[in-house]
Amino acid sequence: MGICGTDYHIYEGKHPFLQYPRVMGHELGVEVVEAPAGSDIRPGQIFAVNPYLSCGHCIACRRGKPNCCVRISVLGVHQDGGMGNLLSIPPGNLIAADGLTLDQCAAVEFLAIGAHAVRRGGVTQGDRVLVVGGGPIGLGVAIFAKRAGGAVAVLDREAERAQSAADIVDVQAFTGDEAGLAAMAAFAANEGYDVVFDATGSPRAMEQGFDHVAHGGRYVLVSVVKEPITFMDPDFHRKEMALLGSRNATAQDFETVVAAIKDGSAAVDKLITHRTDLAGAVGDLPRWATQKTGLIKAIIEIA
View 1 (tube, rainbow, N blue to C red):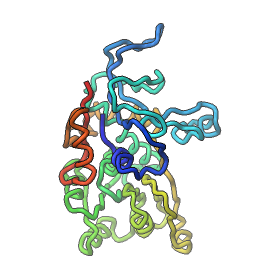
View 2 (view 1 turned 180 degrees about the vertical axis):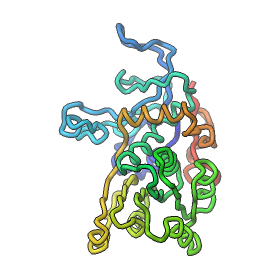
View 3 (view 1 turned 90 degrees about the vertical axis):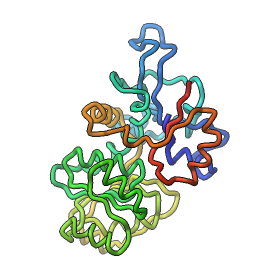
View 4 (view 1 turned 90 degrees about the horizontal axis):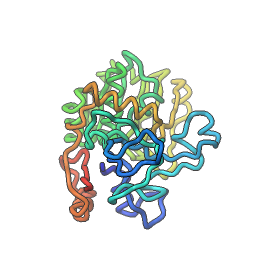
């Protein structure tokens, strides 16, 4: 099971959409121990998990967008998740992952967030793409923006995370100081970026991201914050900018991630930096919530 920024927020009591108590865990690689009679699923099979349980009949579901179902229930957020020994999962939320390891399966969900955002942003060959925020979600966006043919840059205020993006995804990376911002602008020929993604979780950064969008460009908000976001309407209209939200992921995005892991364009082994077990998580998770040096993705092994 992967530990997400959401899980740290839940632990700290800061998640805005959750009722306590709650068993966390939505980034899951699972082994089947019991399957419904007559199904094609067999005990011992390994799957990734789509943790977004949708109703199937609301307006969003009818339009093929179960990721933003009106009555969505997310494992580990709206109902108990995978940080335990056994979990009952609807068969339709199991993602076939033949040939993947459990570690790779546990990474599929957070990478699918990035794959979905890139699809929302319509990244195509040659687009100049800026990803603001070099955490796991931002890295996922960068991976799939590059896979779509974009010329990708990552901006992060922390030099360590910027360097991690450059090393792991092999993209340009910049810090938010004066020199870094100047180099970032120059990478886009001082014309702005065709597609900008925010993956910071910072209202201030989200507002500043509007400035980086080129005329005719797209701005995709992947982050979720429980605060108002404001922008200058004259600049927004002058650029004829498209503003898009990106929420969760769909089965199509999960399949894209599985294919990317298999073809090597999503190197999960470079993303997993920390590891513990269920007993060790009692001490490790609180520490990692505050001490993030060198941390990209932590995994909890559950026997």
